[in-house]
Amino acid sequence: MGQSKPFNTHSILIVDDEAILRFDLADFFMDAGYHVYDAADADEAIAILEAHDSIRIVLTDVQMPGSMDGLKLAHYIRDRYPPTVLLVTSGMRKIELDEMPENSLFITKPFDPNRLLKHIEEIART
Image (cartoon, rainbow, N blue to C red):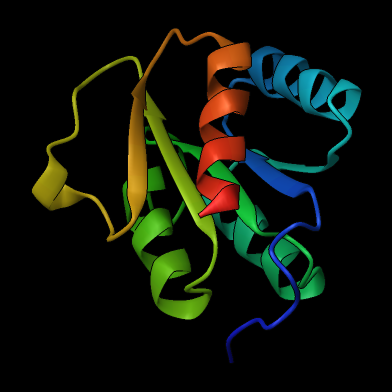
């Protein structure tokens, strides 16, 4: 069950168990014109993705509670929603390229949201 809507829907899903960081990023992306969804864990993120087929960008932290970590979530999303831009973050460990889903980007925390936005916009144009 893939998604077929245009990429430029400007919807992003932020998945992080750190509420303050998640809310700060949500505010940042809303100010940048994005429709923002947020989730505290992978199970909530999957439910949001299933309910909102306009989401084309997912930013997920690696370490979080629940049935799967952010890296497994990223692989799940790549398999189920292939056109989604995937951004995986962690402040605890570096993720190796061979651990990442195809066509995804690893970003070390802390990161500059403005640089992140530029990366997303560059990826969206390709």
